[in-house]
Length: 365
Image (cartoon, rainbow, N blue to C red; front, side, top):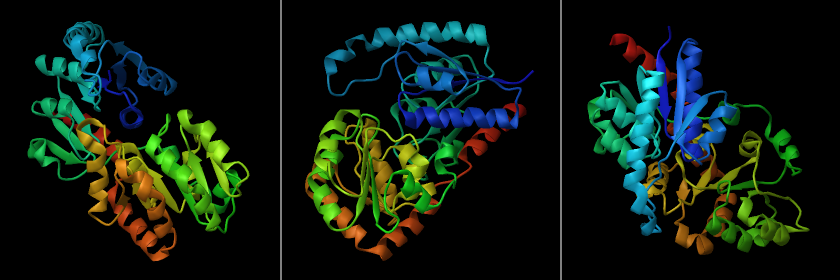
C-alpha cells in the first residue's frame, strides 16, 4: 500500500504548478503513492488540479485583504470552518503526510496535521518567507527553499535548498529561435522583446509599453506582448499597422515565447523568475508592489545583486521601463553577461529532489 499524501495550497499559478510538478514526481518515483489536493474554493486550483488528473477538496478559507480591511471581519469564522472541513477530510483520507506549497489554504491543513503528529513538509518558493510558512516551519520536518539565504525565516537545520519546480513543457528545448519567431509571425533578424504581466495583465507595465512601443519599433526592434485580458483592446488599437508586433491577451505556448525572446519584461513571481533563470534570459523585472510581504521585490533583488537581472520599481515604470529596455537592446555584451549570470540561479530537478526527500524521510519513520 502506497503512502497517502495531502498537498495543500494554491491561489496563484506560482503555488499550483509547482505543487502539480511535485505530485507528478512523487508518482514517477513510486506510482503507488495516493495524492489528494486541498485548495480554496473558488480559486484557480479547483480547475487546474483536476485538469492535471488529481482529486481536490475545496475549503472555505480566504487570505487577508490588505486593500479593503473591512472584508477581513469574517476571516476568523472562515478559519474555524476550514479546520472542521480539514478534520473531516483527514478522517476519510487518513494521510501519512501533508505537504504545503504556500497560499492561505495550506495553513489549516498543515496546522491540523501537526496537531495530530502527522509529518509535514513545506516549500517556500519566494526569497521572503510567507507568514503561514514561517508559523508552520517550526514544526515541519523539512522546509524546501526556492532560494538561498532563508535562515532568517526558518530553522537552518530544517532547510534544504532545492530551487523551484517548474512546468517542464515550458523550459524544455523544443525548437530553434527562428522557428519560435515564425510561430508569432515575426522576423529572425530583429531583436525581440517579450512582455509578460500575468493572465489579467499588469497595468503599469502595459501603460509603459504602450507609451514606448512606437519608439521601440522605429528603432528596428520587434515585440511579443502578452497584455492580459484587461488591456488587450487598447493595446491592439495602439499597435494596429505596426510591423513586427505580436499582441495577445494570453500566450498559451510560453516555451515558444521564451525561445523567441532576446530580452524580457516581467513581474517577479517565483514561477516566472525560475522559468527565466532556466531559459537563461536577460530580463527586466517590475515587481508587483502589493504582493504579500513585497516578496516579488525580494525575488528580483536576489538576481539584481548577482548582476543577473535589472529591476524597475512599479511606480517608476512609466518613465524608466522602455528606456532601460532600449539601453539593453543596444548592449549585446551586457545582455549576454546577464544571461550567463542568471542560468546558475535555478535548479532544473527541484521536483524530483523534493519528492524523493519526502518519501525517503517517511521511510525512516
